[in-house]
Image (cartoon, rainbow, N blue to C red; front, side, top):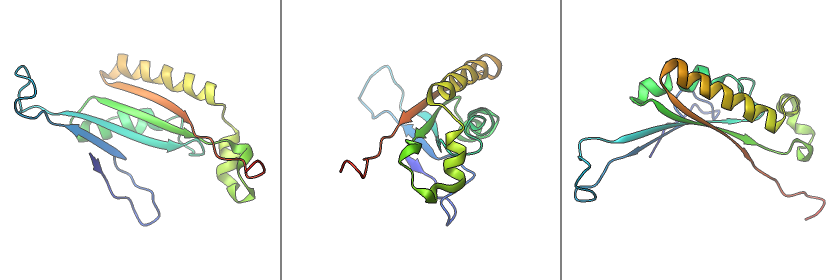
Length: 138
């Protein structure tokens, strides 16, 4: 697995994760050792302004998949419970409150289906609910 470094502030304009599997000699006689399997994984937070467009524009839109030499990618959105954010959440909290998990997932699934039909890429979106412990209950 290759993790590309980002700028000092934690943001980058590159593939977030590139997973490449190379078969070991002798694992399967039907698999040649010359070929590898690559998957690009793009990760976003639910507060990101471009969360509903980055799957198409960054991952599949002629950038990350072609750069990695693959047509398969995974688009992961981390969904954090906004009600547990403190006042420091600012613009991120405001942006995240505009979305609903189920609505975002349906949008991304529809978008992925359109990308597959139009561009010959295979993209799998996932919205992962990431709960945080409630400080009041701890």
